[in-house]
Image (cartoon, rainbow, N blue to C red; front, side):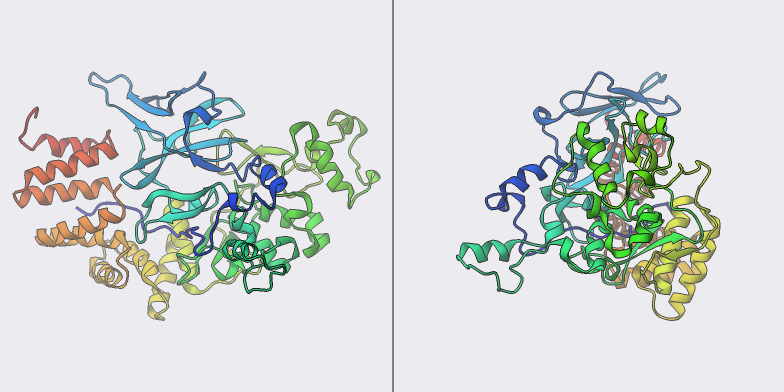
Length: 544
């Protein structure tokens, strides 16, 4: 049986490489900035769960999925429990929440560490309601979804010095990231040479690479790239060929690493990280050009306290505008306490997350209509000055087609992927998507040799190995299938149906013990899998 599984995600890992020293190395010379920055949301956007240091409330720590199939509870020691509802012999389980993602200013999502791999938990704490609810996108699952992989590109915008295991989808070293939150060096560059220069008592930092970057003094393109690496999401981001494992180096253009795609002719709705798109639409940005950037209004080293926030940002507005520029009703201004952002940057629900509100950075004269939504049939185009090859555009459509079940984009992707293959500009990743589309069309004559080519080109393409294993089992080549599936599972262990197929092949090879171990691991990953339980029940053994 050919099982469904995700292809390798378009990821940009965030390891900083040689010269990384960490925030504490900056503290002796920059003590005030260090103390201030450690209190900002960016600095607190990830970390290891230490119950004594956490700030979540547990008064409302129970929730259910949309269908009420499972009850979820989070205990004060950050253990996560799930129990099936209404069953005679209910399925239940317990997991430790090991790491958190998010500063807690709006929410915190928690991660499960399993044998060196990180998965997003179904539990998120939402500050606005002071309650635990399903993580974004988990509400509709009527079973404990414990295998959503935390890929490096996701972790990159919340942590620094990512220690990803090469070739795997979501495998990490024992310490998955070297620095909690966004480190100083993510914006200023690696500090090793800088520290060494001062340690040698050099009075001038003339040594190449020893001077730290000040983003505010960089050319507009590279300056804005530093913020855009996390705050420009677009519809989809595609890494350039050969740049899949390269994080942005401060001082370089983000466009050299990837292409950001948006829908043509559609408004940019507020996503969690699309503040750059929003700002670009504003009259303020259009009128100011390169003079205006994120740092015009935000000091990344400090966050104003709530009582001072309105006055702080009003001061930023008045650096360009006069009070008579505001044509809002006097009563409205008084009601908002002269809070410019309350009228022109209202907080509203983001387009791709629930329970949380975010600030609209398009700085509109009037609030945006809630009916404005991107047209899913619109073409994808590179954002701003970003450029794209046929391969880049084909991958962009492939991602949106599978992510959103978009049949229009599927056909676009299929045609572009075939063109890229004919022109010999398709890399292993593009060919893997093309093979999947052929397979879905039941065109095995094209799919099988493409998967073989992909696996020869790139042994990190676990989806190709998983598919080839299924083809080999259909042909009766059990030993080859078992080897391929084991290699695929070493890269992405959460493919439960692949483990089921592996167990079936092992049974046919006369290895019931190994088959049982594969199924028990599958059941741990997905305790509610009826297929796993059905196959496991057929194997003679104690209690079965």
